[in-house]
Structures are given as C-alpha cells and as structure tokens.
Length: 247
Image (tube, rainbow, N blue to C red; front, side, top):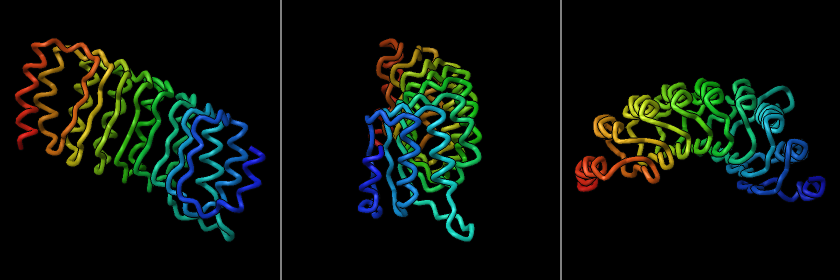
C-alpha cells in the first residue's frame, strides 16, 4: 500500500475506485484512508474481498467519513456506491457503524454480502439503515441472517423509500422470516427486484407471496431459485406473476 500512496497526487480527481481482491487487510486500510482523504469527488468505492475485518472497517469510516476541513467544517458526502463484500465484517464491525454512518447519506448502492455477521449483526444494522435514505440497491446475501435476523432487520427496510433491488440469497431464511420481510416491503412503492435464492422457503410461504408481494406495485423480478418449493407451489405462483407481467 505504500506504493499506492506515491501515485495519490495524480489520482485526486477520480470518481471511481475499484480495489477488490487485493487482500488489503486492516493494516492496509490505514494507508488507503490517507489517500481517500485527498479525493473530494469519489462516487464509487469497491473494496470487495479484501478481508479488512471489523478493525479496518471501523477505521475507514472514522478516518474518512468523519474527516473535517480546516475550521471544523465537515465535508459534503459524495459517495454513491460502497461495496464491501467478503471482508469479514462481523456483528462487532456493524456495531461501529452508528457514529459515522451519517456521512453516507448519498449512498445509493450498498453491498455487504458474504460477511456472515448473523442475526446479531442484522439487529445492529437495523437502526442504521434509515441513515441511507437514498438507497436504491442493497445486497445482504450470504450473511447467515436466519429468520430471527431478518425479523429484526425488516422494519428498517420500509424506511428506504427509493429501494429498487433487495438481495437476500443464501441466508437460511424460512417461512417465518419471509412473512416478516414481505409484511414490511409491501409498503415500498418502487421495489422492482427481490432475490431469495438458496433459502429453505417451502410451500407454506406461497400464500405470503401471493398476498404481500402482490401488493408491491412495481415488482418485476422475484428469485426463488434453489429453494424448497414444490411443483404445486409453483403452479399457484404462476398465474399471479403472469398477470403482473401482462400488466
């Protein structure tokens, strides 16, 4: 990361930065933040698969987004896309979001997938999500949420009025979690895509889908791949979604 700093002076005007897959780790984040402090117009930051962990995550938020200009005037937030998939950000790391997250209000795309923060992390994330009022895309796949975690998280989703795409694949979500989810997201006027692939959702969930997801006026895509739905359940789903497509 020291070598990266050498080129910092030539990169101060960039708007997109993708450093995914570089094994930066928590120590490397400190060098990265030194550079990010000089970038005033960055809109997209992708740090997927860098294993920055809870320590690196907390340091990045504290040092970058809570930075101040001379005279103590906080800089205007510009970041619109933040991708932190596969970074070992567990429940502890999410707990450090609250004090700093107010500087992320412009973020429209947030990817926290494959961090395995579990139900405790979901409960910690729930009061934080409303600080992302402009969020359009949210990826929480592969985080071991289970029914209890999704139940804790779902009420916060209805406070994201611009949410278009919600990805919750491979989270061990069953019928109970799905009921909690659909009860809240049916209030989202612009939701277009919902991905639930790889969850143990069985036939008992079909009635929930028919009643609550049908209430989402803009919903165009629902992904139930690799779930536990039988052919009979699919037949019950098909007429509703054919009607939705025709409309």
